[in-house]
Length: 221
Image (cartoon, rainbow, N blue to C red; front, side):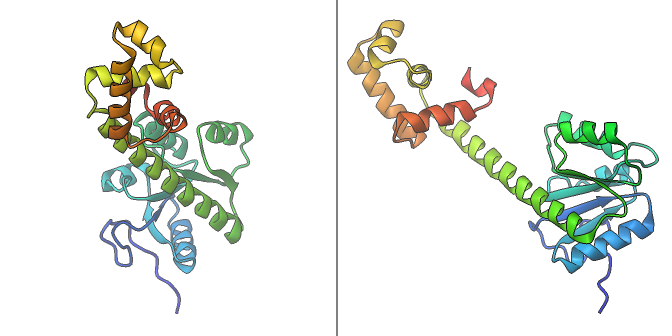
């Protein structure tokens, strides 16, 4: 049986809440339908949109998955959308499709973090490989963001003094150096450090350094 293209509506049949979605944006209806059928045949959940504006109005960019964007479209282009998402802190993985072999455009897209820049007509397997890589990247980004959020929550449980001590330790300061810097005893430093490590659920200095370096600059201030 020939698979049916999925509607662009978030409640479309066949799309399970929380499962990765391939969001296809192209102003050509036949391209949208063909890409949707290909994604369905490979076991992915496609959602199709005729423009970047239609995609943004659907409010689905928070869903796990990736974007397959036509570069040239009426209104905002795929490159415009990529730039907007990056500026808004939503680095959703993007695969670009273009009917023109525009090298400067492809360089711009890849520098901005695109997973791939493919020229139409594209081989089915080439596109599916790119989609698999994009979805894997999105999952990794979500996992990293979740880990950062949890670390910030734990960091916020520290007392001001524990935070001072742990920040110094993460920068490589020894206990006696921290004691001198803060004007407290080395025993007190060890106590604060032990409490902080317990609250952060860390067991080694190496783990502390990795956690600290993974935090946004504002969280480390």
